Length: 429
Ligand SMILES: [Zn+2]
Ligand SMILES: [Zn+2]
Image (tube, rainbow, N blue to C red; front, side, top):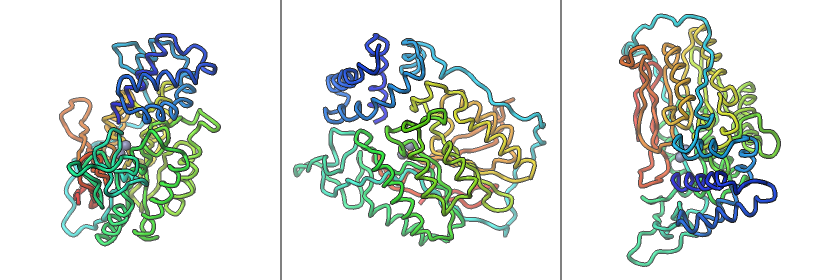
């Protein structure tokens, strides 16, 4: 899916480079048709997927191009890579760190035996497929199979299982419910991190209404199974929006802005989040909250670091001032002697490089304050290390990347948990 998407974006860019897209409004239809044709001719996907996806992306993409005032070579640079042209999205930028000197580092020590523990459940990448159908084909031409439209296999081909399937398949609701039921039994949990990607991978045929239904159904299920006393701290995944990865920063207003999504999230998550947290969530999709005295969580909207969020062509410098805000939060925590966990969807190592390096500086400066980082998105059980910048030899932080609930692609469903603060005893079920 990723490859397919970036290829169709390259097509858009190629058309831009060759001057096809001169007057967007009059030529929009024509451009969408031409890109759809090229997608079919180059066998990037089958006809119906090609048509739907160009249709779905057309308006947002053209609007972003219009606002970005890119020259063709710059558009090519951002979409194809530095070999094709140079663009600002790769230009370096720097957040400002406060003048307060970094406090001396004391090496972390394991907690004494018998010190208090908390149990944290960590959920990510559920990817519920409303159209999952047991018995349908697990091998199909589309980017997502095991659905009503995937067809039914002949006797020698693989078919979608009842609970899920190894293949290009997401999950039926019963599997999500079963996982939550068992997660509840494995409790009690003190709190939950939930790092996004709720909808399925049928990115060529999603509507805002479907995305919102999935958000509501899954948020309410988590609430129901884990109970009203367990607070869940969600973060926004790249699949929550449609078109996928399309997260306009707050400078975009009106119907193309993300407010259709963020305000629904604020409504669904209001049982868990504070009034102040809901306020920044509505504005930029990120927030901070005190979990308990001495511990705070920061939930970042990592779509503002994403290479695939084409709105960043307009301006990629600290979108929504999120990292500058993070520094303010961390400085306040350092002043109070509070520890901070960071949660988000896309791991920082996969971000646009300037975003990534700014984040790395922040982790360096606040290494004694940040005691945990939790991400998802890759669907794999991984971690990323942070080292001290002067020597790049002393490890000072680790980002845990949790495996997905969905089986997409060829995976077992998983759900890790973490036992408390300074040291995270990390267990994957
Ligand atoms: Zn995912
Ligand atoms: Zn993702």
